[in-house]
Length: 163
Image (cartoon, rainbow, N blue to C red; front, side, top):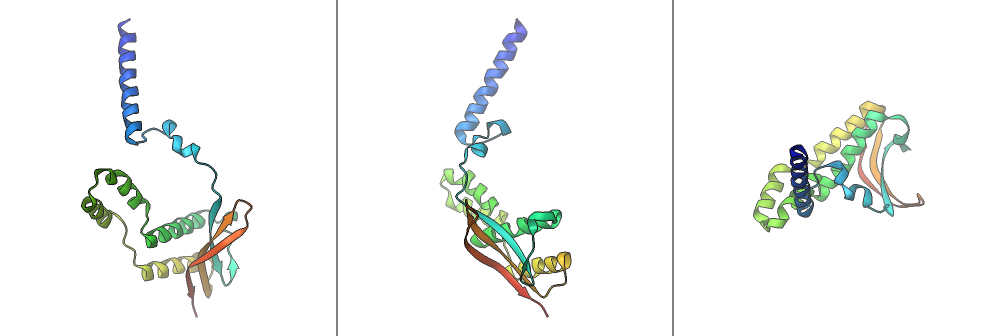
């Protein structure tokens, strides 16, 4: 009987801790992540592309590692240019509730990446050139598609032409 009381006491304490975390907006265990599974399907989707000598590279087919490196870097490049990196989002989420703009700005300045666009563009274009071919023209960008996969718009993030 003593073991049952101890088990119930510990369970109640853990449930109360979880209720507190949920109230504060802190998600600490995968099975409590309601937000992961409750978001409705997006009306528009962004698809990144790589063109080499005006031929689109089929990233969705077979370029496993290279595909991940390119897609991850292109998405982060775009977010960094907009000043909306995941690090900045987390900093704002955690610190905005304290209404201390000075601390928020301090952390954003010291924890987020500062991007040198020219160096980054040169690096990623060199990466594409080395990994996929010795091409002359490289273009990286994205399409915005609707739920019927109709292209609504497109944007070139960077382009490089070599001799």
